[in-house]
Length: 521
Image 1 (tube, one colour):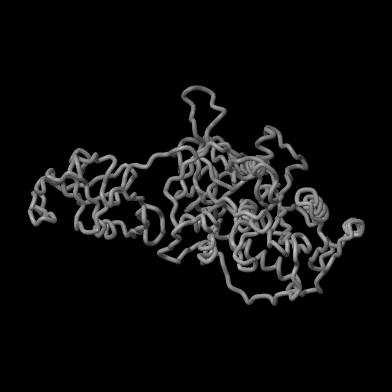
Image 2 (cartoon, rainbow, N blue to C red; image 1 turned 45 degrees about the vertical axis):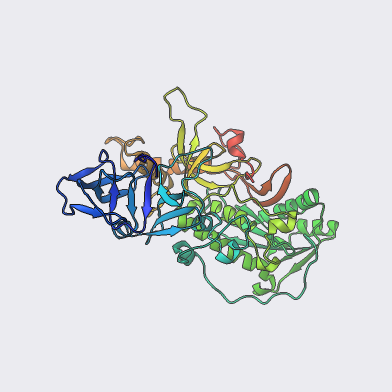
């Protein structure tokens, strides 16, 4: 190695070193001038003196204790054995990366890169739409909604998929195994020949858009799934008609058969007349026999498993359950399925593999560019939470923690290992208070005005109620979420409507904020 390597950019990860060693003492603290270990032995058998022992913080925040200062060295060594003991972490080596993770929480500690046959840690830099860490198998597992290893191994764009530890707390908490429903012996031969429909809900808590139900529609041939968030069951009729019209207009196909349970919302007079005019056959299951509608029942289980994993991973309040459902469906439509020969529903519909490069970890910390700054010294980035993939734009859907509203932005920097709502106690708190606590956790206390002593408890409770109402108005964003849109519409995957006061455009919201669009595939 030629010359002396700069401290701020290079620490070599050495599995053979028993101690951390540095060649530069300017960043040492808690220094002991007369160390108990007077010398260290180098590979050629010689002993070189140790001038001091201290601690160091690396530029990426990694804390090293008992670092030996050896001026004769021309590089800095990071001892694998000492670090695993001090920080309770594991090292994962691949062809070009070394990942350091906490053994218990699986939280990322650091990333090393391979150069000239050595793994080294250097200061991380942000660029464009930045990721905080390089891609790894565990990171893809999180980005794709905690998909199983079997599904991820069939995605060709994820190279060298290997997970060191199959233990995943959100997976174990979110997924349950049940006996399978018997499969139907009839098989469809083309898209939209048969669609399966069912309603989930009503849920005990309204979503941020005011929804309490969702309608799932599954295409039997491609296993593609569309979800409509709904406030009332009565919206099933308009959503099914919307779906049938969309299929005919965008895919050049006509729905032939609709299979549902025996719910009255699927058999309204208006809907029956629509089916009659279009030549659509309605097939209903027997009362209390969900197995006859097993395709969509199993899909509900899959959607809820992924949605729960996303929420457990991110720590989001239950008010965001609708965002979890929509993102879960977006991911599911891009995952290989054994039912369709390990292809994804997306590939079955469009004849090509989906793009995964834009996917990020749901619920992670995001800094979005502030386009509405007031002066030259205003903040250029706002702390937000990533909520999914919008409709009509190559951007990301984020929730602004300071303004407490949802919008889309393409100028974002992701911190995929940080989850603002994680480890925040939600119990007994109103929605606005939870958001304020999270914001203070990120930017520090004192940034959000507090009530004075003259503010009575009754006034505070009223303000809390008003705050929650305003927050819901700001949050009620679109509810139409489409699977993919490149040059043309490709795959609608979800829909939700705005339910605030019966208005499609709450006061103070721009059209862009109110109707963000599709993903950035």
